[in-house]
Length: 89
Image (cartoon, rainbow, N blue to C red; front, side, top):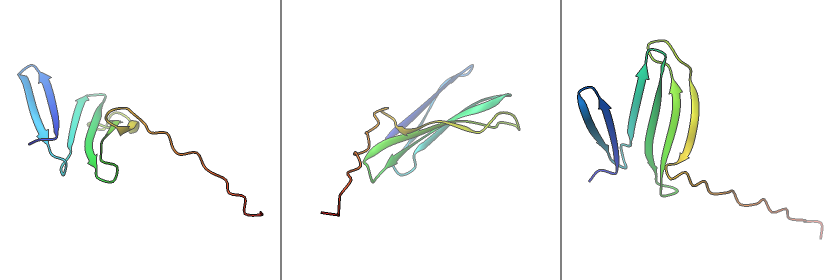
């Protein structure tokens, strides 16, 4: 069974593609001015579905810039506060 799903709607109707935890899925939408790309993947270490969303070049136009990289859910776990240990005691 697929873990990730991608859909595309254009003038020929809708198309769907599937990806698994091992393959992930990459979806690209483009114009003559550049593209936007999403790459969904499964992070085994954190047991989390992750996504990287970025702008990119298409046919030589556009810019390379990451817009978001984190959990698909949008829930970002706050890092643990750094505990300072006083070893002089």
